[in-house]
Amino acid sequence: MNFVLTEEQALLQDQVRGLLERRATPESLRKLITDQAPWSPELWQDMAELGLLGAAIPETHGGVGLGLMELCVIAEELGRAVAPVPFFSSVCMAAEAIKLAGSEAQRAQWLPRLASGESVATLAWAEGSGAPPTATGAAGRPALATRIADGRIRGHKWPVPDAGVAELGVVISGGDGGPELSVVDLSAAGVRRTALNGFDQLRHHAEIVFDDAPCERLTGASGDAVVRELFDRLAVLEAFEQVGGTESALYMARDYTLQRFIFGRQLASYQAVKHSLADILVMLELARANAMYAAGAIEEERPDRHRAAATARVGATQAYEKAARENLQLHGGIGFTWEANCHFHYRRARLLALNLGSQEVWSDALIDDLARADASRAA
Image (cartoon, rainbow, N blue to C red; front, side, top):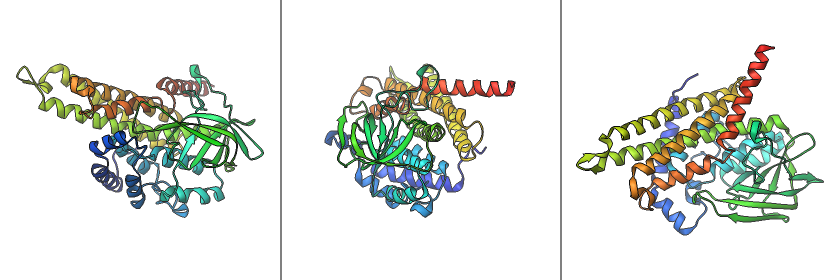
């Protein structure tokens, strides 16, 4: 397993970082919050022109044809910048779902629109529960009340990320043979969207009510296996987003403590501050290594890919939450104000900690997978 980016991946990283340094500045983020804008269409268009939206979509379907690791590189840079675009919802969640569960005809129909940025999509899976449809252990698997009958879907999904700007929804519903995936036009009759108030003002959510809305089942694959594969991929992609945010928050804290003086001494010179930053750095490097291993395990379809994804998710969640919290604390009183940039990462860290199910949910998944592996070896 290679834990270093290839030359091509490093070039991609530099390209994305350069774009975000120009287009996702703290000033632009504050303006979006002030204007109550759900996203930055200008940044989205720039990303489309660079081919970033179709990075992991096959060339035959309008994409660039890169792999999961390249998509992870982009996710990490977006996390570093707290970028105000529906990349995770549309490119990671919805596009990956269609790739895994759609037929060849359905992929040809929907993926080019997502790769070009012509359409924005999202994945509607939650029904108020914090546990994904693959959850095990103490969290338990949530029952999906949303159902499909005669080409119509009925149910209630909330919270759904970026549902206010998405034209297309990939919906996970309950079925007799396990979870099913379908595509729904969110502007169609029978679909009602209501904006929700969220803690992270740069990533908006909504609730969606489906009242016999027309839908199209994804017919390539369905059931527990494909949904688990999807959430493993999403866990790794989100882990990279959290790694990017962790590094940004760590450097923000480092820079501030180097320039801040207390009682005639540099704040960074105090041993407690050094220890705190060093602890975050260790967590960051472990989280990055776990995430890179998990991405490789999924691409190579290794037997341990499920536990690798859960490990990456848990480690990255812990690292980002600690970095965001300590960054705010080390800034002192100003860290609680809009003048400081700490709140961008603090809010995003809290959101991502629950976005695909809580840390406890993924810890349960890891424990269960290890227990199954032990039982298999014993047998």
